[in-house]
Image 1 (cartoon, helix red, strand yellow):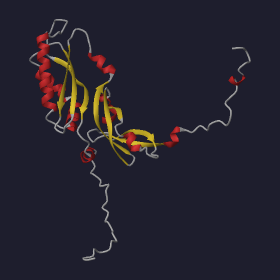
Image 2 (cartoon, helix red, strand yellow):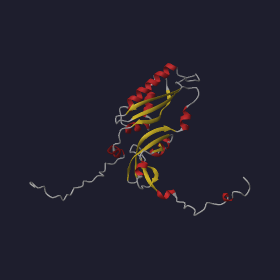
Image 3 (tube, rainbow, N blue to C red):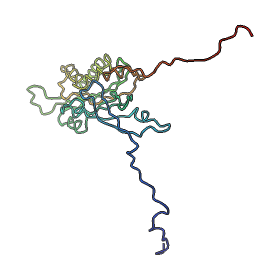
Image 4 (cartoon, one colour):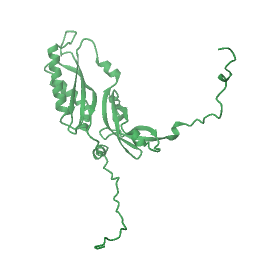
Length: 256
């Protein structure tokens, strides 16, 4: 391009500049409420565009997935390596009522479990709770040294690994399929399933660092507002009002 030919390049656009509007002026803040199975009820805040026209703010919030540290939910830093996923199921006023959606470990915790001179054993199983949720649970465990062991390594044989994995399936099935989702979460927080696996496999090979490191909800039943409110420690609020129909129709004539 020759120098000086395109003189409009250096100039601005013609006409008046478009007024810049702060996008936060049309947004509303909502409180996030955690279920009663956790110690901390107020998790934080989230925002969405204000309702306008055919677009409803509640519809934009429903189904939103939030990730929170269990250390914050339980007010205990010992649980900080667990991440809890919460799903917004219902909106009441300016509050988002959530339900459990999943759990996972932080990356640094997962990497700290893998060490030399020992065998890593993993297993996962799909279980159905009594209230209709299908949950996939992932379990991880490592072998540990026996008492008074001299040998440097603690490797389990392939036959022992198969036996341990079978015991894992049995314990997961027994513990998870006999309770509701709320009770299952209450078992996951103190690692009750991991302790049961450790006891069950003691006769095969001693295990250490047995954790349910991930929980994923594959299928959920239809939303029941009453159960969700009970989960949050409240009662169902009747939003419908009975309207008496008033008619001023003339009486029906017997004969014409």
